[in-house]
Length: 312
Ligand code: SAH
Ligand code: AVI
Image (cartoon, rainbow, N blue to C red):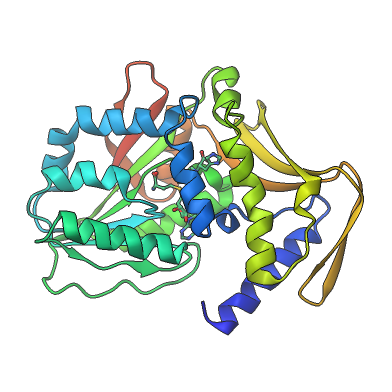
């Protein structure tokens, strides 16, 4: 991270803590420990999204691979451990390049090394970047025939409608004239299933949420008293989203950068939204960004969806 981007991040964090409801972007979950905790979440029995999306991918991989075609550039936003990408790469024998993009540097570079070892003929060009900001895509050795933007995991749900729309517009631009977007989208369902997914019995999601403050202390020099915060996740039915907060048990003054932030006992920090969509709701959002849904795949229980979107 450059000194300049560190200072911009610090400003953004402080601005969030100055809002009437204090908030910190979920992108600050992801340092090395945060990425490892997310990987543990994906294996929890309660966290249905990963296993369900993987099942959809495996079930429909032949059709997905035919739609993507040969010699594509596969650009994955928020690639993490590239777990679902392996399912794609095993079938897409003839790809030009894989470009995993992630904010969690060490984790991204380790995952990219592993993908390179597993797929020796594939050019792998990792990009450490915040995909909500402008970043440059690398030039592959072989000119790809088309760009496929891959955005699995329902990471789109971590953005409000306005920012999700902006992101989809960027993806529309980056996919180019004959490109496409392959995106995983979590669906609305019994709120009990969703709340259990974010309040797992092993406490991994709580550790993941709390890691955000540990990350801020280490990277941005804040002095949050880590023992004073607890995890809270509840479904907001009218907004169709799970909301994660960190709740402070005692009154606390926190120093961050040159600023001091006062927390009252019981006060929270909003750390994440995870929106759950209806099929129509997602299609409308994609359409507004210039996409039409050419194909969609669901699991038998209709918990999760994978959409192949092209320019409308
Ligand atoms: N795609 C994977 C991982 C999802 S977790 C899957 O489907 O399982 C979300 C990933 O996005 C994490 O690896 C995190 O580091 C990354 N991420 C979150 N916000 C980001 C941002 N603003 N810019 C770049 N990467 C981001
Ligand atoms: C990355 N993102 C889509 C996950 C989600 O489900 O919203 C992050 C997560 N937060 C808590 N558990 C998992």
